[in-house]
Image 1 (tube, rainbow, N blue to C red):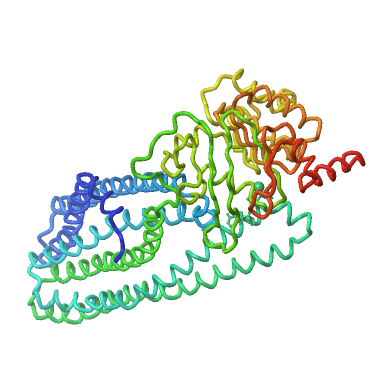
Image 2: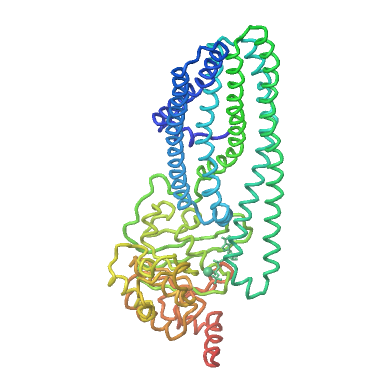
Length: 581
Ligand SMILES: Nc1ncnc2c1ncn2[C@@H]1O[C@H](COP(=O)(O)OP(=O)(O)OP(=O)(O)O)[C@@H](O)[C@H]1O
Ligand SMILES: [Mg+2]
């Protein structure tokens, strides 16, 4: 029913260590079970007045030795198991992270990052605790129980008495069967409420600027409050049930002790068992109560983590939407990019984002793409980069369908500067040199100059080593764009794609950047997407998109003389400039 292979594989490949740890714990249990026996023997000698000082010292030393050996053995075993658990946690987090890089944009758009973070943090920890404590406590409980029963028999305690003492404890499995699934259900609600809160907190933090400027703090707070309330309610429901469950276990232990005292006391008075055996029996039963509670806890914990394990497993089993075709080939040289009869709908969407696109992007040319917001400009690029897969045989590069190319070779040949140039919380240099972390400073300086951000960077005290983001400085929108543009230029890829990468820079800077681009990208394929005519004017071919269709194409001159949409857009922007807007 549940896929447990990830766990089995891990435990399976580390079995010698697990076995050693388990053996240590078993030895510690046997040692511990000797304790009531020694106390029993000591008690038997008391009424006979055969005790000497030597014997007292002998007994105390025995008890001390048992206590020390038990603690050392048990501690060692527990340490080994905990360490194995941490390793499991580490490996699983790495696997999950690896999976995240494999999964497509569609998956993240659907899942939300808060939920995924919760998988990596809470669920993995919960599974780790369950295997570590599970193995540790199950071994401990089972073998302590067995050792105690064997010792009681060796001590000559009649089986009937043992059965009476242990009998009430047999109700435990029934309790577990009853409580287990109910606890599991409530635990899942808690986990889901937590994930939803993390998601909401992340969203609130991300959107804090918007919230503030709209003075919408109250709304944001009340929304968040609802999530917190739901966590509390769910948690209380879980705690009520699991507390009841955990309280019933010691109660059964107490009943067993009472019954044994009645029957055992009777047997002692009638000399069926010795006083020492009676004392040992009560000690054994006390000792057994601990492990029984542990069994309850372990089952409880297993139930709790089982939901986590299912989630982690299902995420690891997620098949990426965009994956390499079997026998995918390398893209060695980028020649013409041909788009034929391309129509595309986003998964789950009814509307076509692109329709009947036919276009050849000749090698070495500069192509401009203009169009209103939502007209499909970014979608075209996402299909080219296989952020989403286009239909078969609609986009080919050097005559090969992009679906048949290895993702690595495709993406290494295309350099993409996205619309919302994301910068990492690291230094400016590392952000620009993202495609080549070993790059020297001078290699990073050139693209920074081309993107017209160099002068700004050298004004910072730490220059290229200035950290960005949470622990560093915050760049303005335009500066961020130019830094992200420098990152795209740094890659020196055969194809450069700028998705509205200059929207937040002023006209003068834009002209500067375009001039350096013209030099740098001479005879290299460049795709410039923009709202502004000024950014695409110089392109060899300009296409105008409207509601997912190409409505006009040609050079700037051709399109202007045509007097269509492009020309009217140019006129509006020209007027805007003249009026100083
Ligand atoms: N991940 C997505 N899932 C579903 N629909 C999407 C997705 N991304 C974009 N769309 C839709 O596809 C259409 C084209 O979007 P696209 O991002 O390509 O527009 P654009 O031309 O780049 O606009 P802009 O100039 O504002 O960046 C829009 O109607 C948009 O709502
Ligand atoms: Mg866009």
